[in-house]
Length: 401
Image (cartoon, rainbow, N blue to C red):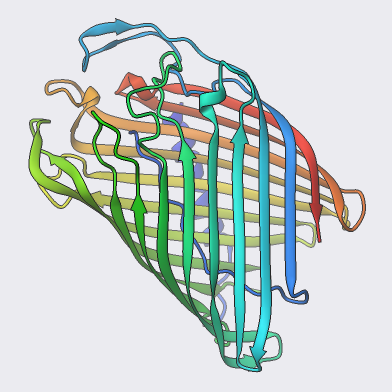
């Protein structure tokens, strides 16, 4: 079924590109790319907050069925934990002009899912970033500006490592939580027929060091760029490339026979992306996205992978009071040298999945509004420990100023 989905999304991307006329000129979690905080167009500060109540069908990402765990040599039954949670989001930005050519920008972002019930409270997750920096205006034409931003940031991430099969906290439950400090810079050229951006950052991520676990401390580097290409009055493409590295302090790379080497691990990523934006009507915008990611482990290549990601995003607006957004993603990730369960002789390690999301916003007045959202995940893998289905449904209130 997923092969058919992949073929349909590929055909949609190609068809949209041809139909648009050209104009003149652990599973491991993927890192989310940051962008430097931008000044508000009219207001010196912006604050947005959302809170609600939600239901999670699989809080610990338990496999869909029991399986034989070749890493442990036992049959592993599974228990799917369901429960309610509180989704919380806060975004704040402030811009202060220092003079006609520079401004001081600050921003804070918090996303959290809080599970109040005892059966699922280890699914709590918090992620926050605080930024501050200087933005220099290098050129201006009407409302467009060429800018250069540089500034430090602090990061804070908390989640608990649990056994997915039963939700029991594992050894070193906070092993994947971290604090970080970093520096980023971005140059953005907006006054051009082909606007472009160049972004760079370095971040030091510090993890706890619980006894009996592998230390996760590492330094993260990134250098990337993207360019906007106009394709007519209502369409444009965005082409992007990013190179990023995770350089671990104590974590070791694997040999091709799955044993650990004495060489510390370094992951190198090449991320190629293309987005096609089509404004089909004043109330309807459609995005088609494709990303191709290559990861190398800078050793013998046991954990190398390639990843394809296809996405369609639809945004609709009804007047000023209602907004509807929908996303659908298919992805696959292949490890040419790795084995399922990291056990020699098992099938090649592969993953694929679909993700869907629909969110509606309804404004009550200039500050208050209501929102509702549905999310769905389905992941398949030859490593059955990471094979699962999950959905969340939630609703709440929002406030902004």
